[in-house]
Length: 191
Image 1 (cartoon, rainbow, N blue to C red):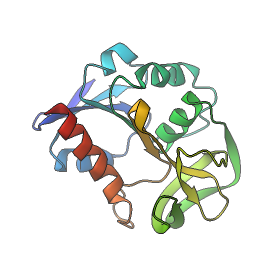
Image 2 (image 1 turned 180 degrees about the vertical axis):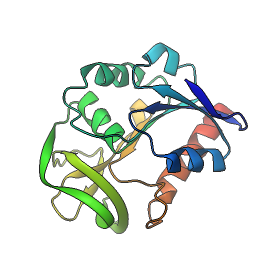
Image 3 (image 1 turned 120 degrees about the horizontal axis):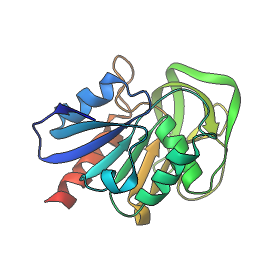
């Protein structure tokens, strides 16, 4: 593990599956004390932080059984936010399925429907695997290209996720509030 930023009112553990620096910058800029831990970190260690961010990363989430087990053990213990691969791991940990897309979602102009508001977000994406479409109420965001799940919210488990990159820069900023709302909730719970 290494400390990315020692200054901040909340302690956020970032599980590094291939984490983008923009995620770390966004967390630090929002006032978080950020510690980056390897993908082999265990749930008991991660639960000692105020919150856990499951980062982006490459490849197929299906073979990452140990990582899915750790996510399962974290649920309900500490606030969790999954981004990209972290979203897919959260999906697997909650009983959803993933699959390889025939054509990956790559670029900075992918339309995503926010189901609760009907608003369409323009998002930045870079992934070749996805969570299979579902009508489950926890699937809060869906791709307008293919109906794949682009976001989850599990309030009872203190977990949410985004397949896209809410911290993207450069790129569209429509999804920034997802990360900001999560951090605000973590701050209010830590106080």
